[in-house]
Image (tube, one colour):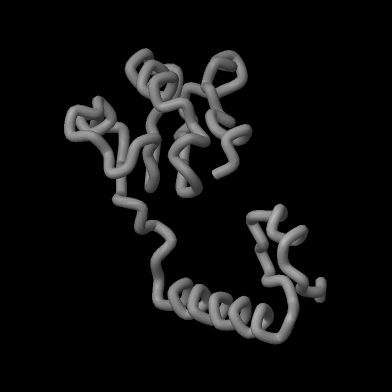
Length: 122
């Protein structure tokens, strides 16, 4: 996660969020300000949350989210299915083959590497 993207959802726009809303996060924990989420859940500002990721992983045993009946938490596994595992393996193999063939891989995260490695764009 790029740090400038952390706390993308701060939940301080209470007038914009319906009380029936559920916050779902399957991306990265720091996308949501967890303390603001806890306050919003406790105050009834939002109806609930479904989280596959938390700000600190693994989640701390004393995290208030674990005791909330309107919160479902999974241990960073929501991505998994047989199809997604096959796709992950396929993309990994394709990216390795691209680099070995002299091309930058798809989904290059660290763009600074382009200055240090002599590969070609596809």
